[in-house]
Structure formats: structure tokens, C-alpha cells
Length: 222
Ligand code: FES
Ligand code: FES
Image 1 (cartoon, rainbow, N blue to C red):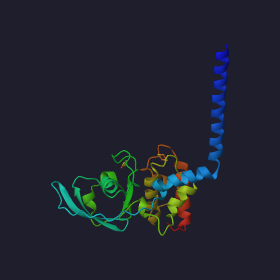
Image 2: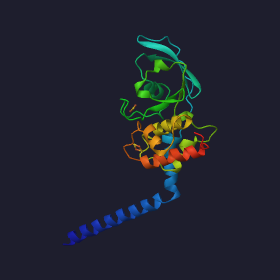
Image 3: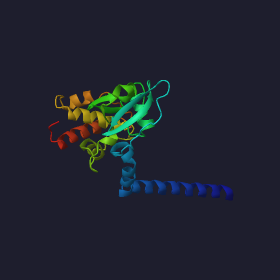
Image 4: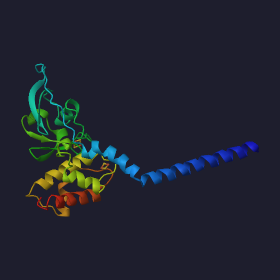
């Protein structure tokens, strides 16, 4: 009997601890601390502005490789790459630019979207050797002088993400869309233009709001 009471008391203590933890968590969530935690996590996903150190391979290309110059975010790299290496893998594995995400690796999700000569492409479907000398822009190349790109800023302010995995690709597609003066930007057109970027968290409503907010920030000219 005494043991039963002890067990009940322990269970009650445990419940109280859980309730307290939950209360603390909720308090934390509503506080600046949570915002700070999110802010410290966000840069890698949304606001990354890291520059890749220039990479130059000294050795001659091996069998099945080709020597190419890639210009990424304004930085030139000279690399020996397998002729069948896709751009996504070269950026992530050779240049350590991991802002561009690998989702399906099949051209279906849009997580790997980046810009080549200001046009959005799926980098998982494109060979690195096809892009010698072209202007490649990744998420890391959007911010300028410590200022986020208006699209990055809008995604943060409109809370246009949940897990954040699709977000870099969403941002790159939005940048390509907003930079093209010939494309319509009404809500239906934005949804259509962004339809190649899948969000499994279904943050679409806020993503649309972020794109339209960024459009206003860019003077509504886009
Ligand atoms: S990883 Fe390229 S489209 Fe999914
Ligand atoms: S925010 Fe999670 S997949 Fe889009």
C-alpha cells in the first residue's frame, strides 16, 4: 500500500515536472529567447551569406574528369570534376556551399534551385561541366554588405517556413521570378511560377505572402 502511494506520488511528481517543463517551454517560445534560438538556426537555411574560399585543384584531371572554371557568387574556382557530376553535388561537396539543398535528387521537389545567369534551375539535374564560366548564384550569394536580400528578409518576417528545408529553393525561385520584369506577379501567377518548389510543411500561404512582400520592398517594379 505504502509502495502504491509512493508510486502514485512519484507519478504525480513526474506529471508536475512535465507540466512545469511544458509551461517553461511555452514561456520560452513566447520570449525573445526562442526568437534568438530561431535566429541562430535560420542563417544556415535562409540568411546564409558565407563566401566560398577560392578552390583551385593543382593536379591534372583524372580519368573521367574535366577541369572547369566555375564562377559562384562572383568567386572563381578551378576544379577537376567528374564529367557526370551534377552541379548540386559539386557546390555542396567541393565548395562546401550547403545552402542549396538536396531533396529528391530527381528534379521533382525544387530544393536544389539556384540561379544560372539569373535563371532558376534544378541543380540536381544539371551537370557541373555544362556551366563553365556562367554566373551561378546560390543562397549564400544573395545578401549584400551584411544586408539580407529583400526576399530573404520577407521570408523571415512573414514566417514563410516551418522546417526550413525547402526554403533556400523557394527563395531562389522567388528571386528569379521577381527579377524578371516580363513575368506576371499576381497571386495566381506567383503560385504557378513557384509550383516547382514543393513544401512538405505546406507553408504555401506564408510563402506567397513573403513573395508579395518582397515584391513591394523591391519597389513593386519586379
Ligand atoms: S533535389 Fe533537385 S529537384 Fe529535388
Ligand atoms: S518549410 Fe518544411 S518543407 Fe517547406
